[in-house]
Length: 316
Image 1 (tube, one colour):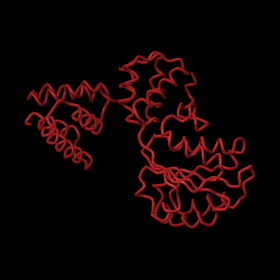
Image 2: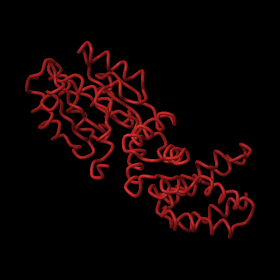
Image 3: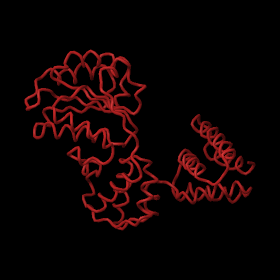
C-alpha cells in the first residue's frame, strides 16, 4: 500500500469510459473528443461528483503524450484576481498547440470563486483566443458565474453520485489495495460520503492507514461521525422527555467521536428525516433544528445550543 500517495490521484481514471457515474455526460464528452470539435464548457455540480476527473480524462484522451504542453489547470480558489486572467491565461492562450489537435485547453477549476472583475476580463479573453484555445470552467454554483460567460459555454450539469456508484468506487479501490471490508463498513462510507467520491476515497485511505481490515467503527471514527443509530437513539430519548439521558448521549458523541456542534446538527437533521414520525412532528423538529443551526453559525456557544435543542425536543 502506497501510504504517501493520495488515492484520489492514484485512482483517477485516464479514460472517459472508466469514469464511474454520469454516463450521459461522459458519452457526450467522448463524442466531442472523437470529432475534436470542443466548444467552451461550463461544468456545474456539487463537490466530489466527478467534474475535474471527467475533464482530465477527456484531456488525456485528446492529447495523449502532449498533455502537459496543451493543458493548463488553474484553481480559482487560490488565484481569484484579474491578474491571473491577464497574465497566466493570456500567456498560455497566445501560443499555438503543437499536438495533432488545433487547440489547447485552459481548465479553470472552482470558477465560481473568481472575482467579478476577473470574470469580466475572462469573457473577452475567451472570445479573443477562441481559434486556438478552449476554456473549460467548473463551478459548484452556476448562479455565481456571470451571464455573459454562461452564454459562451455549453453547460454540463452534474449531480451527486448514487449509493451504488459510491459502493462501486469503494469496492474497486479496496480490491486494488487488498483491503478487507464487510458490508456494514461499505454502508458507513456511503453514509459519510453523501454522494461525494472525494470524501469517500479520503475516508477509505485514512481507515486503511490503521488496518487492512476495515470495520464500520473505524470508518465512523476516522471521519469524526457518529453511527446513525446512536444519533437516532439520542433524538428518541429526548422526545420521550428523558433530557438528562439524552444529554449524556450527546456527551458521548462529542467526546468519543470528536464531533463539533455543526456536525451534530447535520446528523440530527439527517436522522429526523428517517424517523417514523408524522410530517407535522418532523416539520416542528426541522424548524427548531434550523433555528439552532443559525444560532451556532452566528457565534452562539455550541454546547448550550445543542442542549437547548434537546430540551426543545423533550417539550415537543
